[in-house]
Length: 327
Ligand SMILES: Nc1ncnc2c1ncn2[C@@H]1O[C@H](COP(=O)(O)OP(=O)(O)OP(=O)(O)O)[C@@H](O)[C@H]1O
Ligand SMILES: [Mg+2]
Image (spheres, protein in one colour):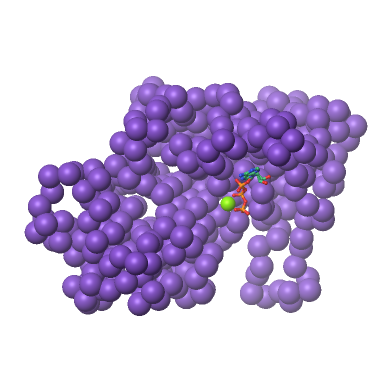
């Protein structure tokens, strides 16, 4: 078997709390990402989606969060052991990331062209001004920004939210990264613009072959964008499958709950299903299955110990005691 583009193997992320205690925010997280594919990562707030993404780029908060166990293999090389300087070579060039709110990553005091050129220069210090300008124009055009010459001269506040997110995507892709990590890239935008940005990401994925890790709360976005889906709950992977398989045959009770809570147009909002309860915090993780106290199928065994991961023939993986016998 060929080496995957990216493989996270048995990762544990710890945080150091104010009382100096080290607690695990994620445990035994494993997944692979191949080029030309999109992996959707879904789960409620606090399940560990963003920190998993940040850990790949070496961006966990300094002095507070660290990768305590496991490996992050980029084309077979363990980048979790890289120095900050080595990681700078990876960020942007090999792996780019876009965030929920583009204003946090665009600098308000510089023109768009200056910021885009900085990004290009960081990876190709010898790039000429003319070449950088041409590349900026090409990228803005690619992401569907009208009058790109004018936009390049403007400051971030002169652009709408949707335009800023397009600029972020243009910047992230300008260095031809192998992987694009998108952390809730559309949640700050209104619904029509969300749909346009999704459309754009699908087009770009097809035309560039960049592998995408798409982090979202939204099963609708997963259905539209992903080839594979990783469902996280309270810092653990509870289910993984190809997208069609997951929607046709969701096996983990948590995934079933997430799918039931997708709003449908023929439904009153009062009828909408919600999973009772909430995700446990870092210091209140149960020893057994972390979903047990919200699960309609939970038994004593679920409360006692965490279930092993079962893998079906088609690659579908589930960590739930309900399926232990079907191994
Ligand atoms: N700097 C930090 N210090 C301590 N704990 C943190 C820190 N950052 C994140 N955490 C904890 O790590 C866990 C996972 O957080 P993360 O931001 O990855 O969640 P998420 O799945 O991205 O949620 P959301 O959907 O709200 O973005 C949470 O319990 C959170 O409290
Ligand atoms: Mg997040």
